[in-house]
Length: 193
Image (tube, rainbow, N blue to C red):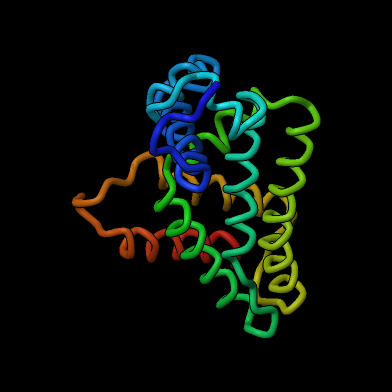
């Protein structure tokens, strides 16, 4: 099928991803058709296959992109004291995820729609991120700064708590995101010391 006049792969490709991200987050992966994505972008449905082999590949690419961006953005400085590293992790996690609500929603809610192979890849990337926080908690426990019975459980609990901010925080509310971050840091600090 011919490309729509004025479309370019370096422009249309990202538009396909952005439209899929919005639509998957709004209506859920299962409810969104390739036709709906094409209509959102303003191309014919058949033209989408120039940019992605299928809807599953599109979902996987969005989730993998989110996880690789997350991993690339977080830099743990192992030479710093564990408490400072943990505080940096808390602030990073809240702010990074706040800026990407649709990607976060899809990364957590659409795992069930991945093929087993794609799920395994995303799960590996998630584990890599979790391992970074677990290393901070482990180092703090070894240094006697943190008192954590099980660093894996503490890791999962902290990540779940921090990610939860995305579900309820809205700009213009009673507290700013920085004030929320400070309060969450206090809760995390108290939980591990």
